[in-house]
Image (cartoon, rainbow, N blue to C red; front, side, top):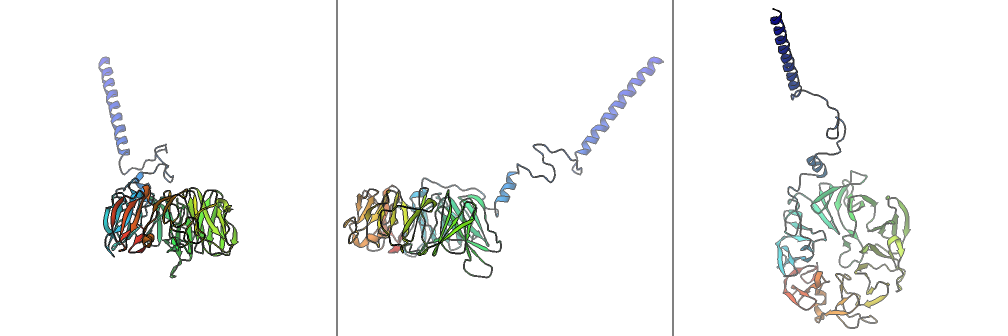
Length: 439
């Protein structure tokens, strides 16, 4: 009897243990249901409610960055090809495409009503069609769908600004950077250009190193302010005048009609200097900027350059810098800022580019004699333009010694400095030449 009771006690204990274990497992299962709200302590991988996650999901970051759902598949561009592509049209009033100067053939077929004359150094170009504007890569693929943006400017370097509604957004190629903003959110923004009087045929030009956006007040036409940003979208200065902008490790400088404004690295105006002359351009050569004010050339730190040439204090010529040489009015200055070449004052050369410059016979007292053509950085003649009547149909030098030349019928072709003709004049528009004039 005792042995039977002992066995029954053991069986009952074992059954009770199984029952308790089963109940416990059911409670665990119910606690993990979707209708439960069980708090867990925050760990490196779990953030408590109300806290900000250090590692947001990739899709949330993208949604926060993009102003709208945009580039579904990120486009790339060919940086090895882009320096050789120039805008071209085969027929008067026709559509534009892009020609490879090495072959003279279209790399991107004509389809645009307008476009940048070249691809920028970042490998992108702004174009327009009858259905709207966009930005293209070297394959002609659209970065934005037609109608998606209202305006666009491809600034020097890796900076594209597009307008959507009353807002402007900055891109580095296909990479969205940020919305460009100022302290007054009621202003309507639009990408624009810098301004310099007597700057060739067109006083507006794309600034180097910096981005300028025009800002207009509600219900009013015209720009009330000009907002200057760096390439990362940081607002540097809010100007109420047209002008140009320079910057270096010492601060920033805004050049406007009869005034230069000095700005520190934090954006504070520290000095306003009255000038006799009007708006001037800013030109960069490497890390150094140059601008001319009241007969004096200035560079980084607003430091006067010891130019070995006298200019009238009333003068303020545009400066073009390139390949270590300054072009001021009708002369070139070398690395010692001494004049080493002069030319006819109406020459439309854009200064030294890719190691060469275009010059014509200088006239009375000019250095260079009766030579028309291209010179190197030492002033040596490299290629002579024998057709004086068509001198202005020849452009500045493109990479690897290519240049555009024209004929009496206002058609343009491509040649090399060694005299090789890549393609005879067949295009009505090519690079900066269009139907007998500068584009």
